[in-house]
Amino acid sequence: MLAEQVQTRRDGLVSQTTWLLNLAAAGPRFAMLLDFFPASAGRRGSVFTPGERFHGELVFYPSARPLRALLVRRDATHEMPPPAWPAPDDTLSDALTRPLLAEPWVIDIPLLLPQGRIARDAAGHTWWRSADGLATLPVASEVNGILCGTDLARTAAIWSGNRLAILAAQTPWGRIGGHD
Image 1 (cartoon, helix red, strand yellow):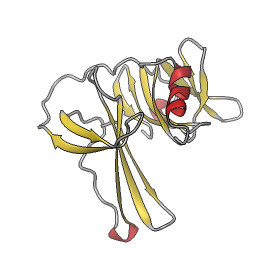
Image 2 (cartoon, helix red, strand yellow):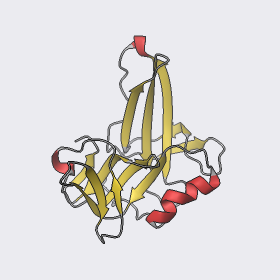
Image 3 (cartoon, rainbow, N blue to C red):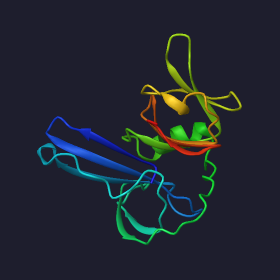
């Protein structure tokens, strides 16, 4: 499990989005499990722990680029050393534009970014920059702690068309969340 995003909507519902990353070579790279519940029900716990690995079966909603899924089977977790995250499938330019060619109404695009860093400029804005210096993308929220300035082997993020929301990253010290 990469990350969980919880947002209270204007209609009084809470949306709980769980982001999964497929470490296998086959199948969609990301899966989004989406659940809604009334805000009056209070905070619900997650059935996942950030960074947890498991084998399971997902069924994706029909789409040109499958993303939203249902978890139909989850196998017991086996203790194994954490594998390296997969390399991005596309160039960054393709990853930002290809989903829009298939589904122009897409608002959020999950990305697996190559090696890079997150830093702040003199004006205090936060940016992700690729290790080769060829790509720089603005980050949507304040990044604090160890994530800022650390060498990021891979970064999982959501691109909203103009900003990145960092979900999690793989570093020399292991996985860290976007809000750690």
